[in-house]
Length: 407
Image (cartoon, rainbow, N blue to C red; front, side, top):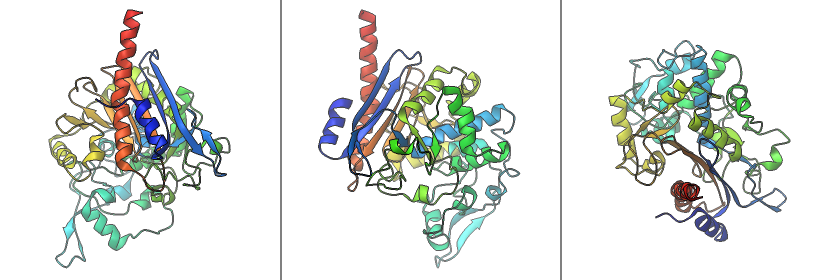
């Protein structure tokens, strides 16, 4: 049984492993509410102030769900389709070939033509082949030879110049698909991704405190968790385990990684999808988001990835025995887990310290943002804390329901 949130998080704070955390959870009717701000954050001056629920957090890949919602709004408006060829909207993506390896001398990449079109559904489910470089050894090698680090900031269409990792739709690998989806949303609407998200996601829920990197709004900067002596540029280094290149190397709004927002606002998005209240998307669209969208080929690739070296990241705290698939916003469980996730739960992470879930069957959603201490990022501790959150919030919800029944 997982330790309680309070016990485990306070112990990690006392041990200096994390600086603090913000945790929010609720049910569809908003009757069960769990909001906690633990620990403290350090200002640039060195002064420590208590962590607050409205502190502005770096979401990292927590951005992906929000970009998916913006893309699905475009589908509802007839600007995009899940299954149409995106070549006319993203010719740079359509021009990519597929890398299959390198020549015997290791100098020449072996490339083959793409044999099927890339679709929005593929981008949203990581089945397009537009893999992250760190997730594919061939692409990582290509980048070492042809796209070394240190290049000045680039927009999405230039930031991922490498080939596809597999034929579109034929496998699964964690990818830049949501960054490309964000760029496509920009092109079909004529507005930046940030403007789209503000209008289609934030405004309907009364969210005013969201901005893509770099956060320049003077009303948000004093509340930035990442603006501190460990991360003076607010690049999200603690969330990424000490790295900062994803934000510093990007120019413009990156739909897979670049958004900042308070957890108290992020939970509003999760709650809207949980309640399926029609504020963000039509009920049928929300239902579709929670379906498994992997075909047979992609499912085989997904299962292989779950057993691979990045298994911990891709499983999101779910054991290998539990069947999972890929929805249009994250991993979805294809069966329930006793005492925990119900069938159809969607979940994902952000960097190494941010995680969220939406469980429509058991009527619960939540977000947890751990603020790790640098230097000396302790990934094992952070992973344990995230798992304690995922498990203990169900215990708290069950105890609350039992109390309501006996009141």
